[in-house]
Image (tube, rainbow, N blue to C red; front, top):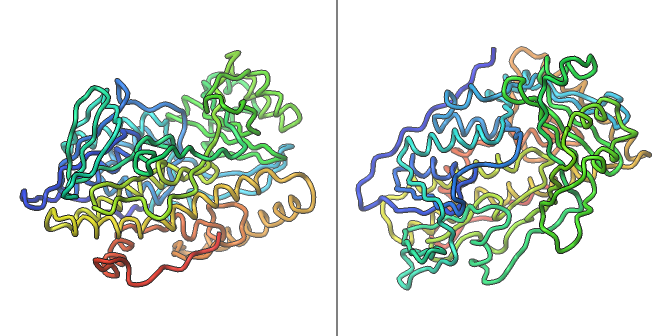
Length: 473
């Protein structure tokens, strides 16, 4: 049984001289995470959501130990646990059904002192709403932001809503997702996300239909995450809600017409055709989709934002997909947004007054902690697009050999009495991304408390004393 080491943050008590009024634009996972972290820092938070109801679309989501560690610190463990599925391991398969490699999630849970959890996005989202409300968040729906302006004294920002209402706050945080209006306003121009050449079909299947098939039943009886990789295409699946639902994502070349919306209706037969020659289990799963039409989601990224995410006044910043949207191929988009919110909250917890200079320092440290890490995640997601989709041939054969070599090293390490995964900045050569010899050594080990402590000490009123070196993938 894994032992989780975490401390639940207590809500900080403040006087009015240091308590900020903060607006967060967007009630997605990142916006709500930021709301929780900032409320714990002792400030007032209003979340503005353009939709008429606060909800989350989509299906499954993987939450890795670096993110569950933060959720636990926000007091969410008991709220989330009833909705979580605990996958025992993660498997990679070749496109013909040949087994490539595995990662022992239970062993890594012990080594990292935090679990790998899978959720239906709606359950994770509702849990964040519950915690934010407990802490005193004010949630406003039908609150579409049309513009914002930093006021002349640079101590506050005013947002203008589509209904004509204006609201002023000491700090505004843009958390409005990959198609961010706040980013466009901040830049003074339209800045659309970058297409990646891939799209996703996302399916939710009822596991009742799988239990009578001996090829499919093991996917339900033994919760695991499964990846199939092959020429130009890959697939991911795992169970949700205690085995009630089965989440499957099929990633294929983007054929959505240019100029169309990024999400359109697709044809289920067209979807199945991508996998007709693949592992028969995938064909069986795709055939359980009983709808003639399925949604196609164009996958886009935001590689970063130069030179800064924040206004020079210290009265505006951004987080999550609005600044660093990534391909879902590292299962880390939501995790990075939650980390952003956690770091921003820790930085704002250190304020002793409401002055522009204090807010500037907090945002400097926030960005210093987050910029390089999130850029690396975006880059690695794009790298995974390449390595998952290799054509059959020498590169694919070399990749598959490495899967086996590093699996043996991994098993040897996990067999030790008390293995612990320690932080290493460099990425290893393991193509199984989350293992210790891949990116797990820096992705799963993130300590936001230590990061903020170190960057705060290094920060002066004009910036960081030294540039952090860039790391390779």
